[in-house]
Length: 160
Image 1 (cartoon, rainbow, N blue to C red):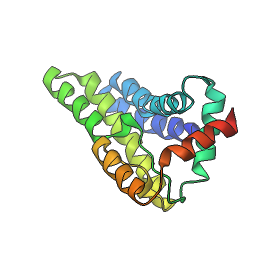
Image 2 (spheres, rainbow, N blue to C red; image 1 turned 90 degrees about the vertical axis):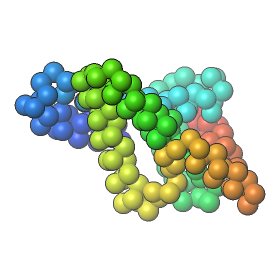
Image 3 (cartoon, rainbow, N blue to C red; image 1 turned 90 degrees about the horizontal axis):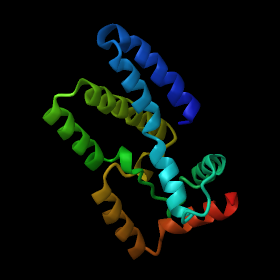
């Protein structure tokens, strides 16, 4: 999904939640959009810190999107993983924080939208929802002669 889509849908959900949660709805909205900061981290990692341009990051991800159905494509965004969400949920419960709960639910809302989007485009399996799963699948792909990093480096080269 695009940033614009996440902003619109996150705002609509936050407005609906405001009557029930008050100011915590702002945290829900921020989380539902800002979770995608991991896309930027992914870009600067694959560009080896040589390209920090947000504009190029968006071009990079549009380029990768064209290759979603390539057998060598595999994606993981760290803030979208079960491990990250599990830690956040643990902290939320441990601290009993309404703000952390709103952030956690904003993340879940965002990831749910992403899953629907990926299902619609027939590429649901191309994003791993677990760090462990990513490394298992990456190893399996390597055994078949595929290296997902090649596509990421190629996308960086195209936008740089």
